Image (cartoon, rainbow, N blue to C red):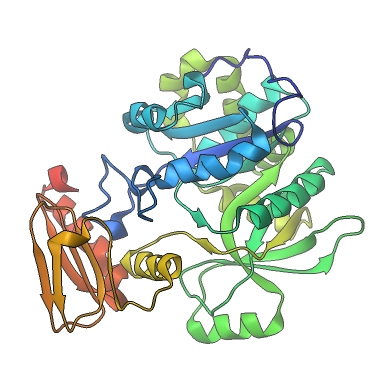
Length: 373
């Protein structure tokens, strides 16, 4: 854990004054197994074929906004790999969690640290495993979010939906806030059915919840304290006494920031939303990965290869092939197939059943096959 007595980088550094990036880098990406594993989760992988991992690409787009002011919160088992991938981030700014406690603990600890380091700080939390296409549009939205956060709002960036997606939560926000490029959030809505999602899009008042939050650290912790004073106090105690991490961390509640803070704060009228019109993808499964690769290539091909295309042979086939096993992969006469070949595991499914891959991972763990998950 970084020392909380570190000095704030000077204002002359690149980026928005006193704006800090917090990058939660956790999760195993089980729906992308066997490519993503517990020991090498998706944020450490290059899933776009552009030579940068999802984590590296996240920091790349944040650096012009924050300069060196970046904290990455990740599991202790991944801390060394994160540091190796991000030499531009100071080693002490990679915060290692002893165990997974969900997003509130990770983001809350970063907030408590920043509250001590920089009294004027505004923090933005951006997941390490998302893909965003238009960096200029993203930067403009973040600047609007920072302006609203300086006024005391908990700000979320709501992605403008382009389809009635059922895999995302939604944010309902319509009323504009005077003097700000932001809307007042009325509620957060869980993943809907397709029919309900279609009605959401028709109203124009709903946006996808991408889990991106911009807020002053003290505001976030005070909102948390309203619902769980002990939780907020424990996070502030850890920021003051980082040597107690092994003792205190296992006692923290395991809860997402949406449930711990965002939903009750929205009900109290204290959450704002800045609409984000840029392309965004959380690369949640092989279907979305295939769609993403289609968008990046935009060449009309019906079969995508992530990796060594020379090792793949196809005839009358469409879908996605990931040849990572060091051997030739041949696909004949199959539509919308997903083939992921690795040295110790082979996955064959279809794009419309890609969500079900996580059930295989769960079964493997139940059977004691942890080594390949």
